[in-house]
Length: 148
Image (cartoon, rainbow, N blue to C red; front, side, top):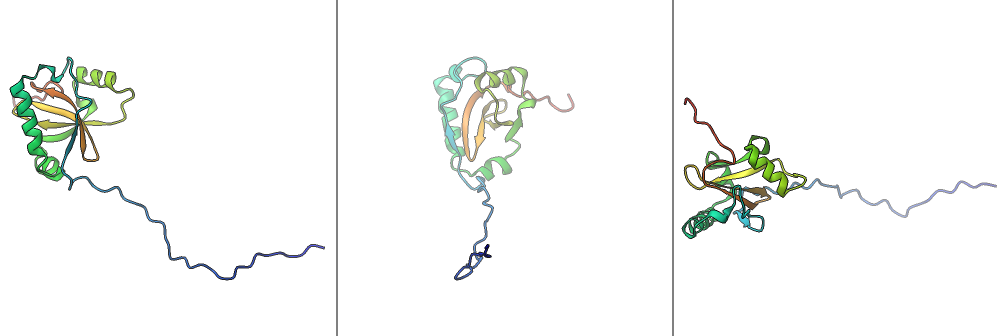
């Protein structure tokens, strides 16, 4: 005595809603922000060697960058400010990163030019930079001059 039982609907809902893939918004139109909790205060590349005048100059430089967008900082001034792959860093810099972060969950660091040789290094994540190192002599990622 089996009966064919089938569910009956009073109406069929409209299929108007479609799932959408949400794109992560670009941070290039945003102004930078800084995280200072990870700034290194020991050798190598620590900010412990900064004088008061150097701290003020560093603070003023970062403050001036806050008036720009990431597009201006990273795209228009990409020669001065850019990401550098961890594999391209000096061996002491790579070793220090592995001491600080275990495991490394990022592929590159951001280099911000302060002066001819001087750089500030950090991790760029969605428009905020976790500042790590002050590099007064361009030792984190030394570059060789062309044609020398």
